[in-house]
Image (cartoon, rainbow, N blue to C red; front, side, top):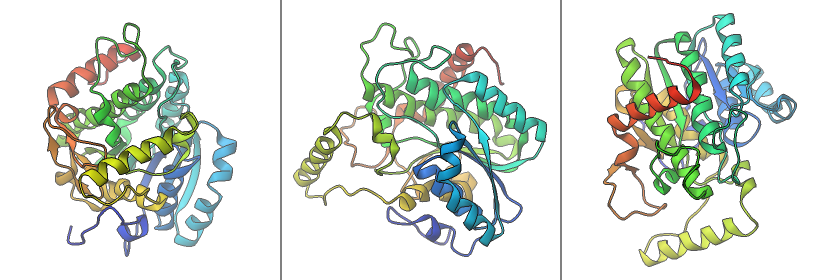
Length: 326
């Protein structure tokens, strides 16, 4: 990693001069935002990209530029139907990929929801935990046999993991008052812990896993927020920044937001990122659980990279979805 990248690096910066011919990559959530840009830049640099989305008609429209750039860059792009909030759909998608038998060099688990009203997936799981974690948990484990030696898994997490550790005693908020941000935090912590556990189980085969924070970006993720809540949050962040003599919060562009996923999946050293959490195109510092920290501060809470906690989540996730993957 001779080239240094940071918070303002774009996907094109990260992949400058890199050809991805003969690389096959799966990206979930390609109907908007980060997923579209991630698929676009990979295909534009010659990769064969499979993009998964719940709404294929919407994804078809959203990825028109992906197809154009793929044609120019020598790559290719195809769509796969996948509803992460429905395990029957997840299993069907995995079955289609396994039946095709084509190997992957990289899986980017990008899709997700944020701060949703209280609800459940088709299988009865709390919406955010079920969609963001359990859907990807089943998909990735079911296609693990397609991952080549030297391949990687990149899970999209968030600084929002600091809102909450997981709660394995009450993952569906059956006994806990529901809070959309706590639920989001639980699911994003789970994304990191899943990467930690997957990396531990597959590194001997040369397969590594990591989790990334893309940064603050304006995408469809904000669609569930009540009117004015985002503006209030930005004001609070800026007040915090001012009190600490830091510059005001600025949203990243979509290309800057997708850069860390691409960096971790393609450019970074596998040993450097394996089992870790990355942000702004570097491996983040581990922050003690009791240390004061705000969303503008970097780092990952210790509970989110705890191997014992990762194993406990793996066991609980298997119990919840009714499958074992060890």
